Image (cartoon, rainbow, N blue to C red; front, side, top):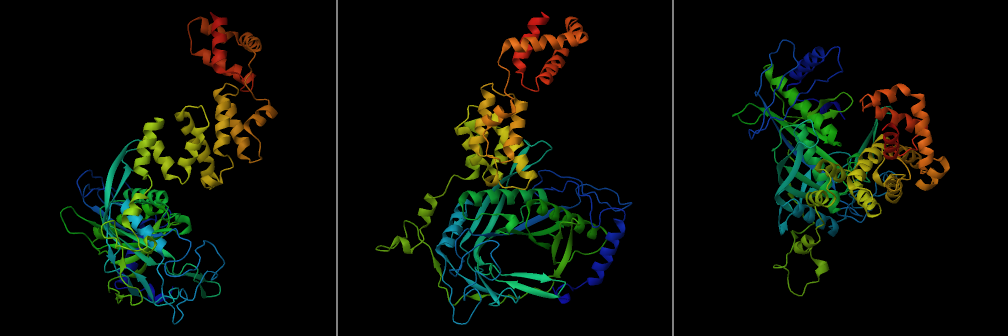
Length: 557
């Protein structure tokens, strides 16, 4: 990035602020400020202290309110690009998926991808938007090396969908079951092209261009500034992510850049107009989004508390330092010179009432047909899962928020006799815990739903104990192709079924620990659990605790 793109009005003021910030955080992580609770709701639902870290600064409550709006770019799940037939593929060799149109060669014309239009309509319907039967494409002019045409085709005048609502839930307490429902307004959804990718080689002092991404179809979702902190914004983005994945309109994989978020952040005092906003660009993680917004709110509060001004600028979030850094200023509004796209006619959509007679249905996009194809939305799925399996709502949220985990759980339930509440514990705590530890997706799990079901069935039939089941799970995770039954047989870890053998083991344990036996006989029943543990240790976890307890109680009576 050239030095000129970093310069901005008031640079001296910024340098003084950054100097003060670094000095005040000496001895701590650079640019890291402890962020207390920041959800100060403008609707008056709840307030929290905006305590600042500055030395000698008194803590004052309810002084500032954060205001957050989001612009989200979701890559449409399509085999080809928005206006060309080039394939869409992540991590393909550089510049291997570039058509003449993508490279903006003279004489090439855009051809609209029907799949992208249908995906935008389906997303709009799922978010309760009004679908415009007539929308327009426009050219947005700006000059970057990774934008060959010098303009982006977007929908600035009249987008494909407007006025929607996203309902999401946010955790309001320390417990996972303390959830509160919130809504954020969707101003519009518009179709547009993605740009290429600039790869900066600092060692050779050069920038390389990869146009594989140029022209890929995007949906830009513009959310109104109805949120107040990073926690709310992250929850809204996660809910949108789940909805897009359920619809199949976007894979919404943030790590692969399929869902990118720009956050507009400002602060103001209660009863006063909104403050000057800063935009934090291209955040590719819900966790980083939350941290970036909370940091930015704190930074702006500290700037204002010190009698300085917040600059209208674009910033980037440095996840290593945990702070935002300036990129370029926005004081002088950039003129994008919007103009109608001359090579694309208005986009006309139909419904059952407005469908022209004698028209091939394949030649039109029918809103009502897309509405009929809408799958079960996450909010409905959550309610159904809670009622069907009688599991906790917070567990259902985990199932829904991890791509593929809900299907994994349901496939286990189809072939196991185990209680759903026991199954959910294994899926969330054991399976998902191992997946997170090794940064694997659900579909990459070395343990299939049928294998986990077989393991749970062994435990249900009393063939193995829960502790042994954990050991077998670890063996299964190695991915050696063995079944749970084979591992149990090889390791000889099945429960001892011979009652006579267990009675002899219990008798030996009691004889070696007469002091515990005496305590139990004196009325200290809690020591019985200690004896049960000793028997389990003696049998290396192969003793059924229920049977052991029964035998010990009989011998001690």
